[in-house]
Length: 126
Image 1 (cartoon, rainbow, N blue to C red):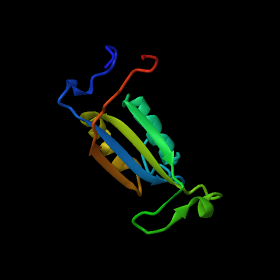
Image 2 (cartoon, rainbow, N blue to C red):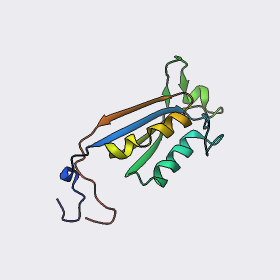
Image 3 (cartoon, rainbow, N blue to C red):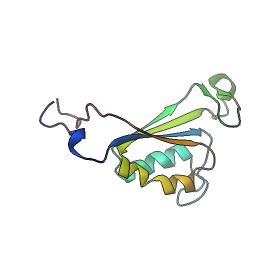
Image 4 (cartoon, rainbow, N blue to C red):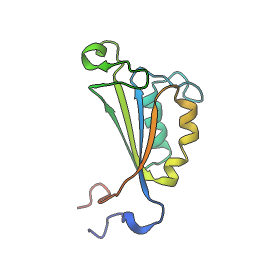
């Protein structure tokens, strides 16, 4: 490893990945971001909290608990495609956002899994 690398093994607080599965058309149910696109509010909230990294993924197709199929062909004009937001950070930081997620999300799925971070390098360092 490079000497500038952030060493994932340096703490007992493991890295986890938080995944939020929602619909592109979902809006924030309540709170400070009420009525805003949910994916955007979550992404901005994660960044404001200083979480290590987040990615918003727009899916081609998917279905959830209601078994309603959403696909690029059927939902293109409706902007109702599945969205997955992934956040990787220490477990303590991720669990701290869960109460706010519960308030903001009306329908969706939230999961947390432990991950092994192999490289987590500051941009511009090689």
